[in-house]
Image (cartoon, rainbow, N blue to C red; front, side, top):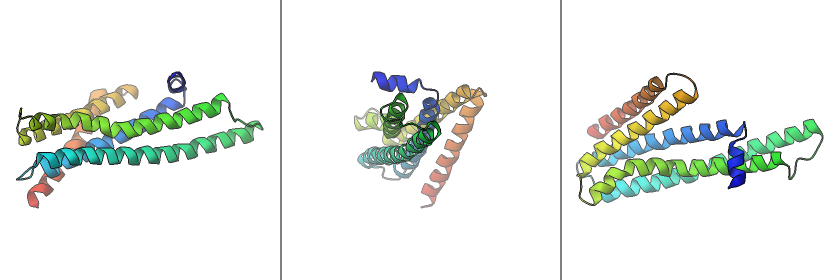
Length: 192
């Protein structure tokens, strides 16, 4: 764990991790919005179908993004080390450079696997309340949409603050894209 936390402090690692996290967070949140629209707002919404679909799809997306990031980042790190070895005329095996590259790959993979599950944990909460009878499924659907849009807003604010731009403008822009995706899905659901 100490080596992983030290890796996060490396100058080139932070942008990689942030980029992967934000991309996967948006992908998973938009995917969950689609699931909610497609299953929670149907005439006979089945709670078990909604919950199982959200969980299995989030898990599948986590595995997919985790594996794809592992493969892509492994390739990039290997190429970077090979280029450095050529430039420095030395073997970088067992050096801090190689260790940082390995830890970067591990961190990026873990974050990409966990991000869809984190997004799911947020948006599935109202359906858990519906499962124990606290709220109705249709109300849970609207609360889940609100939570998904809130997730997009918070991610946008984070991006705005980190990028030193107007964080709230960025947050509202992310919500606008979420609302657009929701409306398209909702209209399609009504037509079918």
